[in-house]
Length: 429
View 1: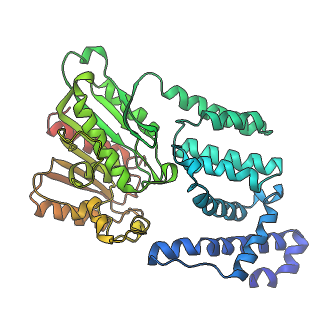
View 2 (view 1 turned 45 degrees about the vertical axis):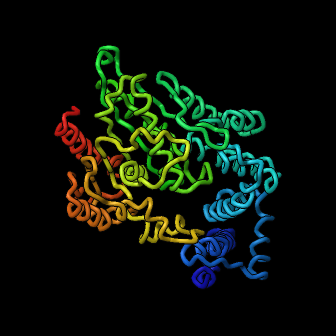
């Protein structure tokens, strides 16, 4: 603010709106920090706090800008509104009406938007914003009603075209493979997307590649793995993309995701004959949080869905982990998982670093040395513990690679080669 005020006259000679716009955006940036403060304070200290009445009054004044279309050009304003709606939706989604929804957070956003945005341009923008984000990050399942409502009421032709195109493309991707419900929770199903090999491969039992998408246990969709599944199916595999519960769609925690991952493997073993799956060659593969779920299918023996058939093992025969998450107990990035737990030690039940034992299936661990999301040191610690436990595994550091080693073109080729070689080593290729 001091710099802006110091040069205000010079700025005003160029553009009279520059200074007030900068002042407004700076205020929105820092007020978002205030708005978010109680949430992060509780995450990191486990103590709840409230903003003072004076600060809350100051923040409430921003609501009058919500129906000013000119504000939408400001990224800082957008960020403030996103934080505001995030906190409002956290309270909204607790209502009983959302219990049976499998797109809880999206439904909450779409309920709140008309309450705060009566201007047509602003209302259209925020509906478009959250629908687009949901289709990209949580998938298209059971969004048809929300999409139809948006297309019928939105006045912006560009928004309508984009949403219609993305939804249509996503819907078409559900064709050409089998969809089987492996579990029902709160009256909605969780699905496996099963890609079968060509008929030339169907005379004998085939190995299965089971994918768990990443996304920090907060986002993710099996749609992200459809391309990989189709590729493996062409090579003679039965390939499976798993839908599991994530926080920003189902209002769940990683504990539920672990239960789902283990349920999925059990279901495949139980129904292997129907899809000609060789139960001695089931491979689980995952990136980031998906890698964590791969590990917990073999390690988290105390975390199970009560409705599972326990006569079938939840442990795959091979584990492929890209930039996985190994320690959920000591890492600050997983504070939100421990929040609210009466006994913080419970999280060790789903923390691979704290579950290691001898007798695990062979495992491939790939991790970038420049991973800023999951510390490389946590990968080396896990590899050392694997060695001490006497397990069969390969650990390959990807030099200078960031977190998204499976996606980054500089490193994805090396990742693919290491995976292929590992599969060949055990007779899967």
